[in-house]
Length: 127
Ligand SMILES: [Ca+2]
Image (cartoon, rainbow, N blue to C red; front, top):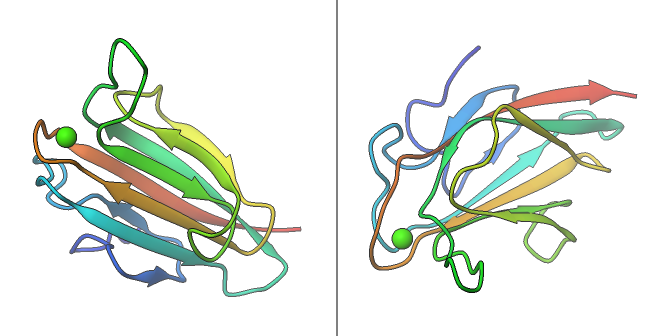
């Protein structure tokens, strides 16, 4: 499977590719602000997002607040329904499926403590 040779920030991905956070598997930078839109080429397709590797700064032990964030939205932009907000480590691989033909990932990091980030893969499913 093709992997994007640069990070996918700011892109709209319309192919079944793997994509990653900036610098992965090296640490991302502070103050990342990255939005990746995924749009299936066929309007009746849904999107499976497979998270293959994931490590962000751990959440606050006290409140669970995510200092760095990986957010998934079930639509073409960040005004769509929030499907999840993840940080720290999660069990991988993990799969999420859109209800429509688009999905949006938002990745942000704060001013300190960086980790390796994430690697994910897009699969289009025809109903
Ligand atoms: Ca951080």
